[in-house]
Image 1 (cartoon, helix red, strand yellow):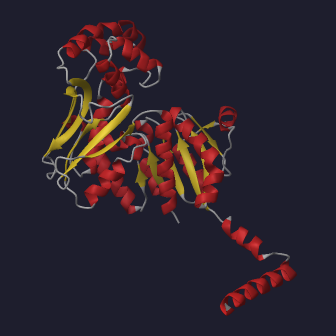
Image 2: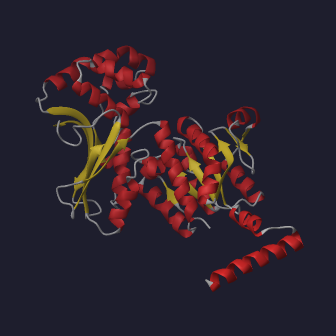
Image 3: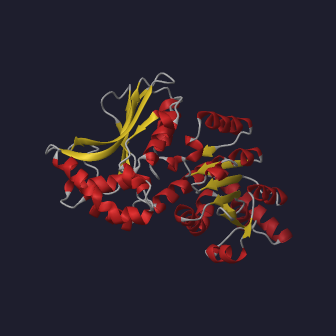
Length: 397
């Protein structure tokens, strides 16, 4: 009781003294302390579907993040392949109009110099492009004190030598590189695999449906009486596929995702090691996008036969599979193909555009760890990139 009175008396005395001498109350001092935020400066490259949504999310949530996490996210650069908009004080909701009227041609080195000139700290490059040209600048950014976050898969699927060189630069300069959205959009997949692998858990297999667009197409096609081309065209119109759906149907994107997961297990793999079934017939691969759409109905007979030949308890799924002796650097077998799977299996029960990942380990045996959820879409992917930004920001000084 006495100690409480002493504390209250001391606080009142301090508050009175401060009020008399400076006109400042203790409460206002506490408020001043709480607004001393950690400032994190972001350079965002790519402001199309994912990048544009991401910038809007950050701008809308800035105040909330400042209050809840004591972090001030400041976007000082917004760029596409040709122009950049720079402002050390950041941008508001009208950033698109500013970019349209005030952006200038640039080089990545100019963005680095701008950050240096204005003494910006806690620097993060966010890559939402699909550019291999921009990826070539990653090491330069790392050398100049930038951390990396990317939804762009290219850095993680280029040659193993380039992959290892980037990680060497990250270690030398003590910088982080986060890319959770490279596989599974906003699902917590890569972090889960890293945690299992680094804790010594022996992962024996990773299998699943890695493409939200192909998930949607075959989930609908397997269960309906509609033609394959009808389902495909609806997927295109609904925005589930790339503008040219052959990008999805080729399987290359799924193959790249499988390679990324293999490399997370320290397996020495190249993209050429992945066997990929291209779902686009050879005669349709070199057509223009418009010509492909005009002839898309030519796919119907072949896919009708595939579905007709299915047993009653089976459905079609486009499955990625990493297996083999994963304890050896070169022991991986990687396949991506259209397969009949049991209707009552986890993969067979997929709905909509969900992705699913089954992670088999030595400890869990035949019962996999299953991660399932929305595997496609700009909003979901942007939210995943936003999550990476917040996780990295928490680690910065």
